[in-house]
Length: 216
Image 1 (cartoon, helix red, strand yellow):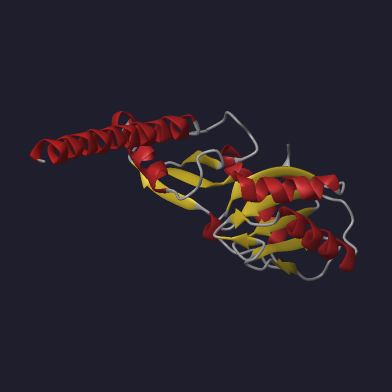
Image 2 (spheres, one colour; image 1 turned 135 degrees about the horizontal axis):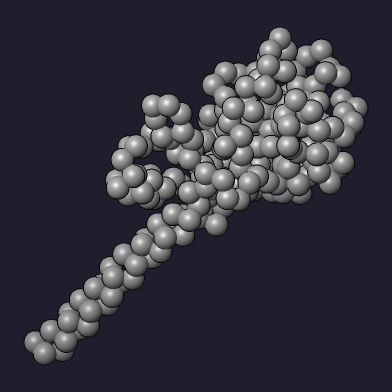
C-alpha cells in the first residue's frame, strides 16, 4: 500500500478525530463525548456509529482512501535497550504496565539508527472507527502512530509522506515488527502470579480455620 495514493488523513486523538482532505480547505473535527469513549475504551459503539455517520452527512464527506494516524495521547511508548538479551524482558515489563485488556492490546517495535522503541495502543478504538468508515465505503490503507507533529491544513499532505517512514509500525499488519507475541506470555505470567497468590491465600485460610477449630 502506497501512502501517496491516499486522498485524506484521519488523525485520531483521545477527544475524537480530525479529518483532512484535498476536498476541504480546513480541518474537520469530530469531538466524541465521554459517554461514548472514555479512557480509550469505547463505551457505546452504536452511539459512536451515529456520531460518525452524522459527521459524514453534515459535511457531505464522500467515501475516500485514507491514512489513519494515532495521536500520541492514545499511545503508550517506551525506549528499550538495543541489547537483544535484555530487550524482551524490558518489553514484557512495559506491556505489563499498559492499562488495556490484553485481547485489545497491540504493539509495534520502532527502530531507527540509535534507538529501539515499543509503541502500544488499544486496537479496539481504531479498529471500531475503521470498520464504521469502511462500512460507508472508505478504504483505510494504513494505521500508524503519531509522526511527531500535529497535522494542519498547510502540511497534512506532507504528513502522509512522512508517515510512509513509519510503515514498519502499521498496526494493520499482523507480522512485521510485531511484539504481540509477548502480550499473551506477559499476561500468562500475570495469571500465573495471581494463581500462586490465590493458592497461598486459600492455604492460609485453611490453616486459620484449623487453628480456630483446634484452639476451641
